[in-house]
Image (cartoon, rainbow, N blue to C red; front, side, top):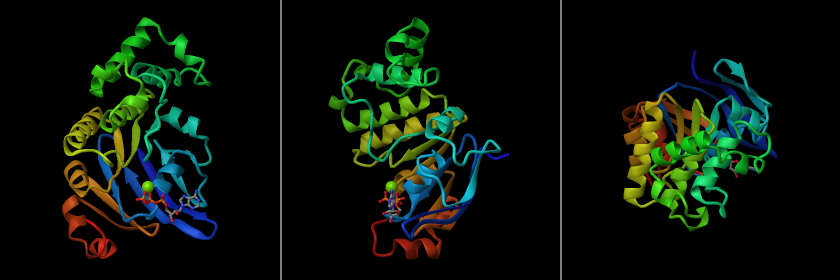
Length: 248
Ligand SMILES: Nc1ncnc2c1ncn2[C@@H]1O[C@H](COP(=O)(O)OP(=O)(O)OP(=O)(O)O)[C@@H](O)[C@H]1O
Ligand SMILES: [Mg+2]
């Protein structure tokens, strides 16, 4: 059984077909790249999988179970974590507290109840492990708003991992990063995948996608126009056509 199975998924916004009959599967311990020109429907796909919008048609199975029409917090508890195109940690909290709040979500329905309750030794230890794995330990006491973007993005991944996901959705994690920052982030994503977590990676940076992903799916105008290995996708005429005149 595949970790995630998306079947004929469709989404319309006031007559605009943002996603049109998209089907694919994602497996545990693999990184599936999702690419496509601006407005192709990539973020919309994540918003449907994570329960932010209801789909217009189709079905999504996670570990064999239908998850359509579930609320975002129910879906995250089932094991689907995500980060956003625009990072959104709690800006006035430090790195450690941001991770503690995320850890608390596993146990508490409300975010704020969890911050103090979770300054227990075992939870602090778990936060420390996540912070170390994400490579942000030297920033543990820094407020999120003062962090460089590369560190913020790794904090976001640590926060998503705090919910112990089986599947992680990453929306353009390397956008805006310098080369070294992006390399460090790629290494972190590889480590996450090596733990057996499935990753869906939306990415505009072709070097990142080609280097990191076992398979790549291409969306254009809401339609899945190709899927295959990086080599297959790179030489696919439909993909070249979709990107023609656009930066590749
Ligand atoms: N909440 C919304 N209301 C109306 N239209 C929307 C909404 N969200 C997305 N759209 C439209 O759906 C289409 C797909 O948008 P989406 O954000 O999924 O694209 P994307 O592939 O993530 O693009 P980008 O690479 O620029 O991030 C676009 O035409 C967009 O304007
Ligand atoms: Mg997007």
